[in-house]
Image (cartoon, rainbow, N blue to C red; front, side, top):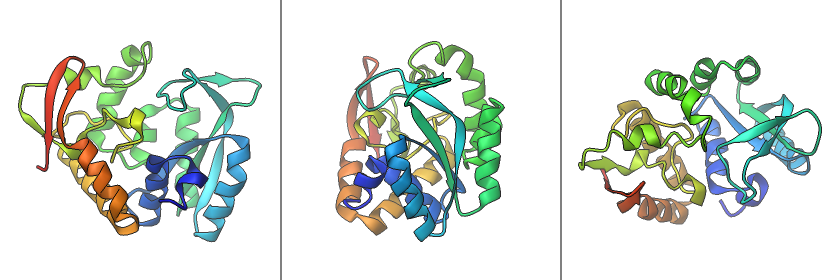
Length: 217
Protein backbone atom coordinates (compact mmCIF):
# COMPACT_ATOMS: atom_id res chain seq x y z
CA UNK A 1 0.00 0.00 0.00
CA UNK A 2 3.02 2.25 0.46
CA UNK A 3 3.33 2.42 -3.32
CA UNK A 4 -0.38 2.76 -4.09
CA UNK A 5 -1.50 5.23 -1.42
CA UNK A 6 0.47 8.18 -2.87
CA UNK A 7 -1.13 7.39 -6.22
CA UNK A 8 -4.74 6.91 -5.15
CA UNK A 9 -4.69 9.10 -2.06
CA UNK A 10 -5.75 6.68 0.68
CA UNK A 11 -5.71 3.08 1.85
CA UNK A 12 -9.43 2.64 1.20
CA UNK A 13 -9.14 3.91 -2.37
CA UNK A 14 -6.11 1.72 -3.03
CA UNK A 15 -7.92 -1.30 -1.62
CA UNK A 16 -10.94 -0.63 -3.83
CA UNK A 17 -8.78 -0.75 -6.96
CA UNK A 18 -7.07 -3.93 -5.75
CA UNK A 19 -10.50 -5.46 -5.16
CA UNK A 20 -11.29 -4.87 -8.82
CA UNK A 21 -7.96 -6.38 -9.89
CA UNK A 22 -8.59 -9.43 -7.67
CA UNK A 23 -12.19 -9.86 -8.85
CA UNK A 24 -13.83 -9.03 -5.52
CA UNK A 25 -15.67 -6.12 -7.15
CA UNK A 26 -16.78 -5.60 -10.77
CA UNK A 27 -16.34 -1.81 -10.70
CA UNK A 28 -15.09 0.85 -8.31
CA UNK A 29 -16.10 4.50 -8.35
CA UNK A 30 -13.52 6.92 -6.96
CA UNK A 31 -13.10 10.68 -7.01
CA UNK A 32 -9.90 12.29 -8.27
CA UNK A 33 -8.71 15.78 -9.09
CA UNK A 34 -7.31 16.56 -12.53
CA UNK A 35 -3.69 16.46 -11.37
CA UNK A 36 -4.25 12.93 -9.99
CA UNK A 37 -6.04 11.43 -12.99
CA UNK A 38 -3.03 11.20 -15.31
CA UNK A 39 -1.16 8.81 -13.02
CA UNK A 40 -4.33 6.87 -12.21
CA UNK A 41 -5.00 6.36 -15.92
CA UNK A 42 -1.43 5.19 -16.45
CA UNK A 43 -1.78 2.68 -13.61
CA UNK A 44 -5.01 1.35 -15.10
CA UNK A 45 -3.43 1.00 -18.52
CA UNK A 46 -0.50 -0.96 -17.11
CA UNK A 47 -2.78 -3.25 -15.09
CA UNK A 48 -5.40 -4.08 -17.70
CA UNK A 49 -8.11 -1.87 -16.25
CA UNK A 50 -10.55 0.34 -18.10
CA UNK A 51 -11.38 3.78 -16.76
CA UNK A 52 -14.11 6.20 -17.75
CA UNK A 53 -14.93 9.56 -16.18
CA UNK A 54 -18.07 11.38 -15.11
CA UNK A 55 -19.19 14.28 -17.27
CA UNK A 56 -19.43 16.48 -14.20
CA UNK A 57 -17.27 17.50 -11.25
CA UNK A 58 -18.11 17.79 -7.59
CA UNK A 59 -16.96 19.95 -4.73
CA UNK A 60 -16.73 18.25 -1.32
CA UNK A 61 -18.88 19.82 1.37
CA UNK A 62 -16.01 19.60 3.87
CA UNK A 63 -12.39 20.64 3.43
CA UNK A 64 -10.71 18.06 5.67
CA UNK A 65 -9.94 15.65 2.84
CA UNK A 66 -12.93 13.38 3.51
CA UNK A 67 -16.62 13.84 2.96
CA UNK A 68 -19.62 11.70 2.07
CA UNK A 69 -21.31 14.70 0.52
CA UNK A 70 -20.53 16.88 -2.45
CA UNK A 71 -22.13 19.36 -4.79
CA UNK A 72 -22.14 19.19 -8.59
CA UNK A 73 -20.18 21.97 -10.25
CA UNK A 74 -20.94 23.53 -13.60
CA UNK A 75 -17.48 25.07 -13.67
CA UNK A 76 -14.40 24.95 -11.48
CA UNK A 77 -11.65 22.65 -10.29
CA UNK A 78 -13.66 20.01 -8.54
CA UNK A 79 -13.27 16.27 -8.27
CA UNK A 80 -14.13 13.96 -11.17
CA UNK A 81 -15.54 10.49 -10.58
CA UNK A 82 -13.59 7.68 -12.22
CA UNK A 83 -15.28 4.34 -12.88
CA UNK A 84 -12.65 1.60 -12.99
CA UNK A 85 -13.21 -1.99 -14.10
CA UNK A 86 -11.75 -4.91 -16.02
CA UNK A 87 -14.80 -4.60 -18.26
CA UNK A 88 -15.27 -1.33 -20.17
CA UNK A 89 -19.02 -1.87 -20.58
CA UNK A 90 -19.46 -2.30 -16.82
CA UNK A 91 -17.58 0.92 -16.16
CA UNK A 92 -19.75 2.74 -18.69
CA UNK A 93 -22.89 1.23 -17.22
CA UNK A 94 -22.00 2.53 -13.76
CA UNK A 95 -21.33 5.97 -15.19
CA UNK A 96 -24.71 5.94 -16.94
CA UNK A 97 -26.61 4.97 -13.80
CA UNK A 98 -25.01 7.78 -11.83
CA UNK A 99 -25.74 10.29 -14.58
CA UNK A 100 -29.37 9.16 -14.44
CA UNK A 101 -29.38 9.48 -10.61
CA UNK A 102 -30.36 5.83 -10.30
CA UNK A 103 -28.70 4.99 -7.00
CA UNK A 104 -30.10 1.48 -6.83
CA UNK A 105 -28.79 0.35 -10.22
CA UNK A 106 -25.49 2.15 -9.70
CA UNK A 107 -25.03 0.28 -6.44
CA UNK A 108 -25.81 -3.01 -8.12
CA UNK A 109 -23.32 -2.31 -10.92
CA UNK A 110 -20.69 -1.63 -8.23
CA UNK A 111 -21.36 -5.06 -6.77
CA UNK A 112 -23.26 -3.98 -3.67
CA UNK A 113 -25.90 -6.36 -2.19
CA UNK A 114 -29.48 -5.87 -3.34
CA UNK A 115 -30.68 -5.35 0.23
CA UNK A 116 -28.11 -2.60 0.82
CA UNK A 117 -28.95 -0.87 -2.46
CA UNK A 118 -32.62 -0.90 -1.51
CA UNK A 119 -31.82 0.44 1.95
CA UNK A 120 -29.74 3.24 0.43
CA UNK A 121 -32.58 4.12 -1.94
CA UNK A 122 -35.07 4.28 0.92
CA UNK A 123 -32.84 6.36 3.21
CA UNK A 124 -31.32 8.68 0.61
CA UNK A 125 -34.05 11.37 0.66
CA UNK A 126 -33.46 12.03 4.37
CA UNK A 127 -29.73 11.25 4.66
CA UNK A 128 -28.82 13.49 1.70
CA UNK A 129 -30.20 16.46 3.61
CA UNK A 130 -27.69 15.84 6.40
CA UNK A 131 -24.08 14.68 6.26
CA UNK A 132 -24.97 11.75 4.00
CA UNK A 133 -23.29 9.19 6.26
CA UNK A 134 -26.15 6.65 6.47
CA UNK A 135 -25.12 5.92 10.05
CA UNK A 136 -28.44 6.87 11.64
CA UNK A 137 -30.39 3.95 10.10
CA UNK A 138 -27.80 1.55 11.54
CA UNK A 139 -27.70 3.19 14.96
CA UNK A 140 -31.48 2.80 15.24
CA UNK A 141 -30.97 -0.97 14.96
CA UNK A 142 -28.38 -1.21 17.75
CA UNK A 143 -29.57 -3.71 20.34
CA UNK A 144 -26.51 -4.03 22.56
CA UNK A 145 -25.24 -7.19 20.92
CA UNK A 146 -21.84 -7.72 19.39
CA UNK A 147 -21.36 -7.06 15.68
CA UNK A 148 -18.83 -8.29 13.12
CA UNK A 149 -16.02 -5.82 12.53
CA UNK A 150 -16.25 -6.47 8.78
CA UNK A 151 -19.26 -4.13 8.60
CA UNK A 152 -17.85 -1.39 10.83
CA UNK A 153 -18.19 1.66 8.58
CA UNK A 154 -17.90 4.18 11.41
CA UNK A 155 -14.18 4.86 10.88
CA UNK A 156 -14.42 5.74 7.19
CA UNK A 157 -13.34 9.30 7.97
CA UNK A 158 -10.12 7.81 9.40
CA UNK A 159 -9.40 5.91 6.18
CA UNK A 160 -10.26 2.65 7.90
CA UNK A 161 -13.00 0.49 6.37
CA UNK A 162 -13.41 -2.78 4.48
CA UNK A 163 -16.61 -1.79 2.69
CA UNK A 164 -17.25 0.90 0.12
CA UNK A 165 -21.03 0.76 0.59
CA UNK A 166 -23.39 1.43 3.46
CA UNK A 167 -24.68 -1.93 4.74
CA UNK A 168 -28.41 -2.27 5.35
CA UNK A 169 -27.59 -3.96 8.66
CA UNK A 170 -24.38 -4.64 10.56
CA UNK A 171 -25.24 -8.34 10.36
CA UNK A 172 -25.89 -8.30 6.60
CA UNK A 173 -24.43 -11.61 5.41
CA UNK A 174 -23.54 -10.37 1.93
CA UNK A 175 -21.81 -7.29 3.32
CA UNK A 176 -19.86 -9.44 5.77
CA UNK A 177 -18.74 -11.67 2.88
CA UNK A 178 -17.54 -8.62 0.92
CA UNK A 179 -15.70 -7.33 4.00
CA UNK A 180 -13.97 -10.68 4.48
CA UNK A 181 -12.95 -10.86 0.82
CA UNK A 182 -11.67 -7.28 0.97
CA UNK A 183 -9.59 -8.07 4.06
CA UNK A 184 -8.06 -11.10 2.32
CA UNK A 185 -7.00 -8.87 -0.56
CA UNK A 186 -5.45 -6.37 1.83
CA UNK A 187 -3.60 -9.19 3.61
CA UNK A 188 -2.25 -10.41 0.28
CA UNK A 189 -0.74 -7.04 -0.61
CA UNK A 190 0.09 -5.57 2.80
CA UNK A 191 -0.28 -7.79 5.87
CA UNK A 192 0.94 -5.08 8.26
CA UNK A 193 -1.68 -2.58 7.13
CA UNK A 194 -4.34 -5.30 7.19
CA UNK A 195 -3.59 -6.08 10.83
CA UNK A 196 -3.65 -2.38 11.70
CA UNK A 197 -7.05 -1.99 10.06
CA UNK A 198 -8.44 -5.01 11.94
CA UNK A 199 -7.12 -3.66 15.24
CA UNK A 200 -8.86 -0.34 14.64
CA UNK A 201 -12.17 -1.81 13.52
CA UNK A 202 -12.46 -4.33 16.36
CA UNK A 203 -13.22 -3.62 20.00
CA UNK A 204 -15.41 -1.14 21.82
CA UNK A 205 -16.54 2.01 20.05
CA UNK A 206 -18.83 4.85 21.06
CA UNK A 207 -21.05 5.68 18.12
CA UNK A 208 -23.68 8.41 18.38
CA UNK A 209 -23.37 8.12 22.18
CA UNK A 210 -24.02 4.38 22.01
CA UNK A 211 -21.48 1.73 23.02
CA UNK A 212 -20.92 -0.91 20.36
CA UNK A 213 -18.59 -3.91 20.44
CA UNK A 214 -17.14 -5.18 17.16
CA UNK A 215 -15.70 -8.69 17.10
CA UNK A 216 -14.55 -11.42 14.73
CA UNK A 217 -17.85 -13.04 13.87
